[in-house]
Image (cartoon, rainbow, N blue to C red):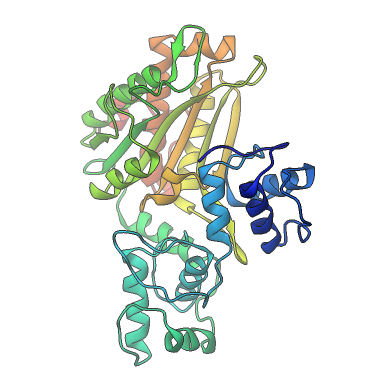
Length: 374
C-alpha cells in the first residue's frame, strides 16, 4: 500500500482517522479526509505504544496494527487456522486470560498459533467442555466466570525465563539463526562507501564462524543475492526450531550527528498490559553491554519494539543496530575487519552469558574465544 502522512487527503486517510477514533486516540472525526496535525499526533502515539517505528507515517505495518487493535474479545469466533491465523487484540486478551488461569499459549503476541490452540483445548478439557479449540460463546462465558489463579508477575515472562534456566549453561548444541538485514536488490542504508546488506552479511559470517567453533548449529536467513521479507525470515527461524534469533542491521539519518549501537527486543503495549520477551530483553541488554565494553561506539542501550521479525518468531529474537553509516566515525569503524571481529565477539560473548547462571557469569568484556571454547 502507499504511505500516508501529514498533509495527505483521501478515503484511506478518513478510514485511518476512524480507526484512531475507535481506539480513543482521536476525537470523533468530523467529515474530513485530511491527515492533519491531530492525526499525526495520534498515529505517533499509537506507534509508540505498539512498539513500531515512530515516524507518523501510516504504511503497511502501522495500518495492519491499526486493524488488529480494533478487535475485542467476543467480536468473532476464534480458532486455529494454519494458512491465515487470526491476529488481533482479541487474541492477545485470550492469551492473557489463559496464562492467568495456568495454561500456556506461548507469548501474548495476538497471533492465534499452535500454542494458543493447544492451551485453549487444554482449558476446555479441564472445565468439561468439548476440546475443539474454538472460542465460541460457551468457552467465552467460562473464561469470563473464572478468576485469575497465577500471581507474581507476568506468567508469560516467568515461563520464558524458566525455559531458559532449564535449558542448561552451554552454547554447545544450540540452534541460532543469524539474520543479516536486507540483501539482493535491497541494499539497506548506504554511506561513506559502505552498504548495509554487504557489511551485515560479513558480520554474520564472522559470528557464524565463532559459533561453529563452539558447537553451535547456525543458520543464516539469506544469501548475498536474496532478500526475504520479515515474515519469511521469521518462518524460517520457526521451521528450524531455533533457540534464538539475532538480526543484524545498520542505520542512517539525514545529517551526521546520530551515532552508536542499540539493541531491540519484542515488546508492545496491548490491552491492559505491556507484553515483552523477558529473555529477549536480557539478551539485548547483554549485547549492548558487550558492544559498549569492546568498542568505542556510543551506547544506545535497549528498546522494546514489535517489528515483524521480533513478533513472529516463536523464540526470543533480538535486533542489533551496529552503527550509523551516515556518521563518519561509525562508518570508519565499520570499514575495519578488526572492528567487525570485535562486534562478532561481543555478540558471541552475550549469547554465552545468556545461558550462564548468575554465580557462573563473567563480568562484561572479559569473555574471550579461548575461554568460550571450554
